[in-house]
Length: 153
Image 1 (cartoon, rainbow, N blue to C red):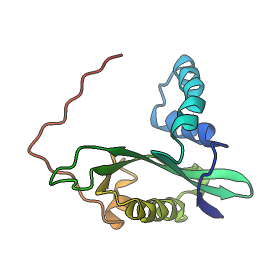
Image 2 (cartoon, rainbow, N blue to C red):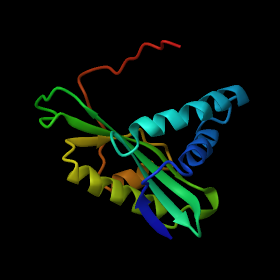
Image 3 (cartoon, helix red, strand yellow):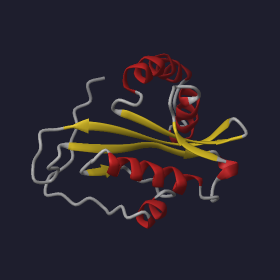
Image 4 (cartoon, rainbow, N blue to C red):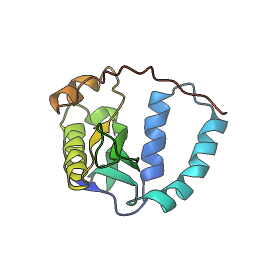
């Protein structure tokens, strides 16, 4: 088993789609095709710039992933360096779960985040992932603000 940060986009679209198929079981074929069509451009413009992909590979086959999207914001007391990360696409194929793959991926991602001098990394934990993230030191976010968003599509 090899755990590493991806140097190119080889296999990233497929592992992303495997994750999305599981996370969004009602995703239509048209939605999947639209996403698949947009991934090469995204990876070409962002990979190893402000998007980092951590891969678990066994015998040349990707069996797990964790993605980190980094963004820069105007510094404030909550993020004095102005650099924060969002964890996405933490995925291990079903037959390989409970073998420490996601832990190893996240430990490498966290180590790199420290080297990048990010102020924090955040994620949205699934029920199954919650114990792993707690074990790694993630805490529930508490804020006096109410999260909101405006859907534009």
